[in-house]
Length: 153
Image (cartoon, rainbow, N blue to C red; front, side, top):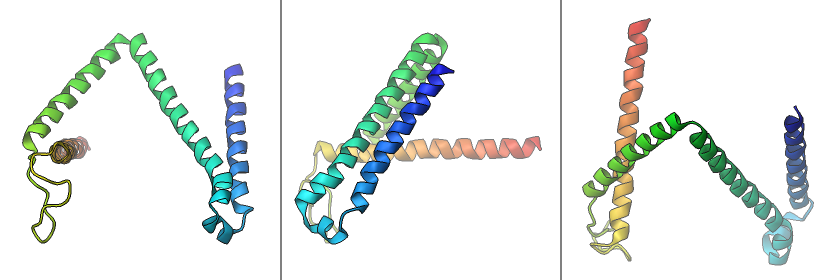
């Protein structure tokens, strides 16, 4: 009960700080805000830094709590490692499917930085194939679950 009260106070403080920073932006003249770099730095930078801090804090907290949960429950750790192994296998398959050919524009000219054999081309292709494979597997499971639900009813 006490930790819930502390959490509510923390949420309220974060909300108030965010609201104050947000209101400060609207208190300034819109035209001056678009043209004056010093004013932008004074008014907009604090809310950006605050938002960035909250984002990093949320990521760190989520990762730490997930790791604590995995360590406390070895069965989930085993399942997680199996899932990561499957994703790694899919990544290796996608890497070998990807090509590293030159990247051409609509006129057939090689784009700057898109020369044949670059690692960037290979990893972009890997990402595309990785997404296609995972999307296909997700689609198959969706259809399977849909058919299974139709058969049960």
